[in-house]
Image 1 (cartoon, rainbow, N blue to C red):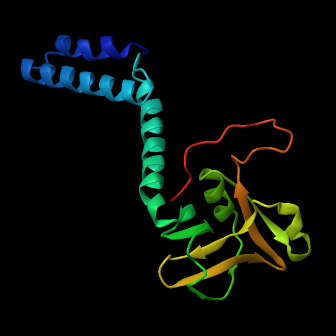
Image 2 (image 1 turned 90 degrees about the vertical axis):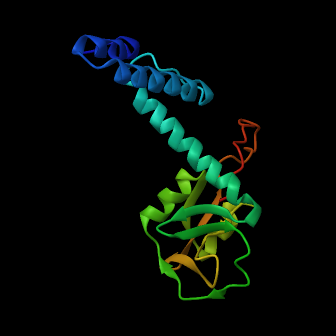
Image 3 (image 1 turned 180 degrees about the vertical axis):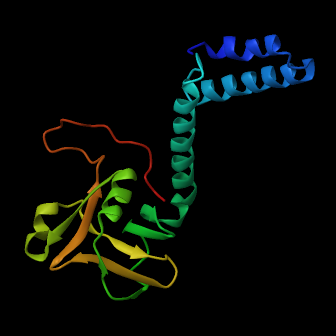
Length: 175
C-alpha cells in the first residue's frame, strides 16, 4: 500500500499511538528531513528511506577516504587489508605475490579505479597513470597481485581522457 511518508507518520495517531510516541515520531521525521536535505535528498515517501540510506553510506565512505588521506595512501580497503594504488609501501617487506581474484578488481572499481591484470610484456598499455597494485597491511608487508605472468595494475577512473571527452574529477580518492 503506497502512501506518502508524511501521511504514514501522521497515520500513527489513528492507530492509537500515545501522544508521547507521536511526538517522538514527529521528531524522528523532522530529524530525517534535516539529514535528507543535508545529504541532497528528499523524503517524499517511505521508499525514499532506502535512497537516503545508500546516500549516507556513500557519504560515509567518502568521509572515511578524506579522513585517512593525510596518511598518503591511495587505493581501496579490502577484507581488512588495503589495495594500494599509491602509498608508502616501498619500505614494507615484499612477500610472495597473491593470486588475482575478481573481488580485488571490484573493490578497486568501487573506490574509483579501473583495474585489470596486465601481462608483463604489455605494461606500457596502462599509460602514465597506471600503477602496480600492492596488497598490504600498511604496517609491515606488501605483495603484488598476480595471475600467471600478469599483475594487477590500476589507474584512476577519474583521469582526464585524451580527447577531452571528460574533465570530471571526483572528490579525493585517498583512503
